[in-house]
Length: 233
Length: 80
Image 1 (cartoon, each protein chain N blue to C red):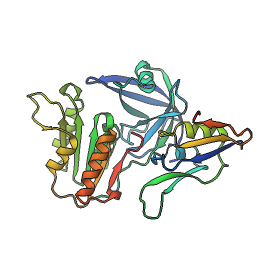
Image 2: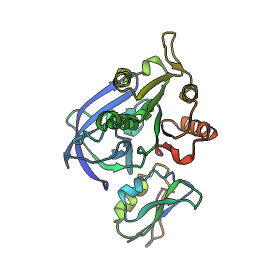
Image 3: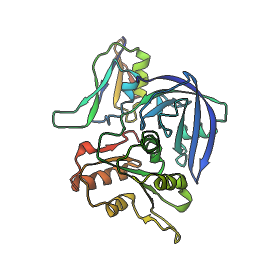
Image 4: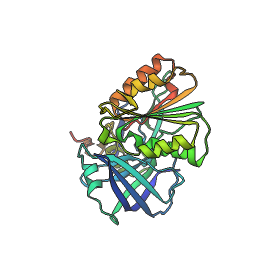
């Protein structure tokens, strides 16, 4: 679908954990959107020349609105704008855009840090719930502190319900009660996998993670065309 | 068309915002025959308005698009 302008209004917003803002925008005109999981919207933000990119968290089956997720800790103009929006406020964006979408790989590994989960959550919901995709899928999601954790139950429940989905939450600075993988998310990926053949890896998060993970994957024999990452992140 | 756009390929990360905003002017293509990475390129200076070309440039996350006003020679984007 070619990108077009949308007007939408804030239906709901919520702070998740310590620093993540979730926003649900309900479409006004046009009132339906078609996109591929993993794509993003480009929003008009007062004070910013040009449009600001935000990955769509929701799956394409939710075609009457879009959900966004932002790490507000950096306090940029975009995150401040979204933070100040109130339910009912209007926004304008162009969508869909981007080419970070799932390919025909035999097995899918999703690797995210922080709010990089945004586009990946949409992909996972689309594949598992809407398409009943049976390919083996892993989510390795790195956060820093225990107080940063959110959507843990959502992904844990998906892992219980769908035998082909494995959730690997990772903290780099855990407390003594953390029972899951610790360290950099890249280390946990290597810890969990021995066979790197036929896998497609989808990376979204900080630049350091994307560079480090790509380097490791290439060393393990994963070809460049099977390493996908969100470029604007 | 008063605005002429140029893509700085070494800065382009292939995010494709420009293609979404001004699809008649920008497209993605391979950097070279051996590369799998896609980068933006200018296929025409026409087909989108000057405003759309400028918005595409301003929305590029790496400021890889330069906009020049052909009539005055002034660089409109990025600001010098």
